[in-house]
Amino acid sequence: MLSRRTVPSLCLHRSRLAKARTLSSRASGILSSLDIPTSAEIPGVYDGQWKGTGDIMESVCPTTGEVLARVQSATPTELHVALEKSKEAYHYLRTIPAPRRGELLRQIREALAAKRDALGALVSLEMGKIKTEGIGEVQEFVDICDYAVGLSRMMNGRVVASERPGHTILEVPNPLGVVGVLTAFNFPVAVYGWNFSLSFAAGNATLWKPSPSTPLCSIAVTKIVASVLERNGLPGAVSALVTGGKDVGEAVVESRDVNLVSFTGSEAVGRVVGKAVQSRFGKSILELGGNNAAIVMPDADLSLAVPAVFFGAVGTAGQRCTSTRRLYLHRDIAPKFLDALQKLYATVRVGDPLTNGTLLGPLHTRAAVGIYSDAVQRLRETGAEILTGGLRYEEGTLRQGNFVQPTIAVPKSTDPKDTIWSTETFAPILNTAVFDDLAQAIEFNNDVPQGLSSSLWTRDLRNVGKWIGPEGSDTGIVNVNVGTSGAEIGAAFGGNKSTGWGRESGGDAWKQYVRWSACTINFSDAAPLAQGVEFSA
Image (tube, rainbow, N blue to C red; front, top):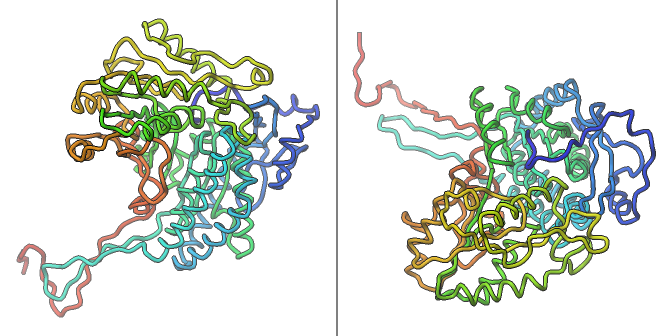
């Protein structure tokens, strides 16, 4: 399966959908502001034209349980046509100078910014994250467009000195082809933005296969991008969209017409994707599980550390790849820290994510609630102490949605290899343990399969040096006095080990979206061989 987490079947036979539905004013207002139909079935395929005659997918609001829309997914034929048009679009786009592609990205940035708040509200409506986080996610797309505009004039190769007289060596980047982007439900806008912006700047066409449970976000974004492409006379398949389930995702991953597959999802599915792409010698970017740890030293500023851990564990209802899932506290400050943290948990405002002031929205699906409940049950069965949480919210309208209590637990075992510590649970569950010195805490941090994000809280420069050095954290994101969650777009985003080793967004991530050639040029009147080899008849 190619979605972030196991979800109930979202595909329904067309004959079951004859009855009309009535949308709440809350939902219809958001959809209408983004030109998404509120009555008829919605085409979920775009390759320059909107279409879709495959299975029907339901988009379900995690807050209320109402069906927001029914989306027509891609048939195998429609996917094949989209791939063919993407290839044609790539052949067109690669001839456009990179700075001109940057100007098009600037226009896309402006179009997204104009709809930022409406798109952010859609993210809250369909995914479930709170309003400020939904808007912030769209801002990430806007920001990475800004970054890619500048990058379009800086995607440089380099000149390498040759050992042979009259020769020079160039390392040259060129567009790669078609980039397939498979995104997860938890960031239904930003992750595509990271990939599309860099891919477009590099001269590639992009084919988007979103999570089957957040099709509306992908349709809204594609409409905005397509309007800019159309206005500038570019083929729409430069930014193609194919919604669907497992079969559509598998077809994209296995297609030899897709030169690079960027996949965000679970470790288990990432392993399948990686093998499939490698078997055809394609390129892949894998952004998989997190299981991130925060370490708090006795000299830490708790006025900073406690709120950061609170956001890291509770923000997005624990459904960020970078959510804080493990908390290691120095023995000297553990009681004080946990007391302060529990007081913050007691103040969390749970409810409609579209309401100002809400801090905790719902989990994305009913299945996710089951995963949360199973994890809490395992904690109880293994003797863990539940300090707070551990139950569903059942009060009033909360029972209609997928609301669960943020949980802090103290497992009986501190062995990182135990399932409780080594398995990522995509829910607001924070497991905590104490340590006696930094070396032990680093061992706890590193001795799990995943390696995405980590955070050390200290004011001792010696601790900082050890933490970011060769004996320190082995994750892709290594923070000091900053939480595990909430990365900026300027640096490359990604993790090590079973997180997949992929890198997206800033830094040198753009280099994955091009093909590299080493070009030796002889501008002399002789043709000597390298390394002084003589081969004369």
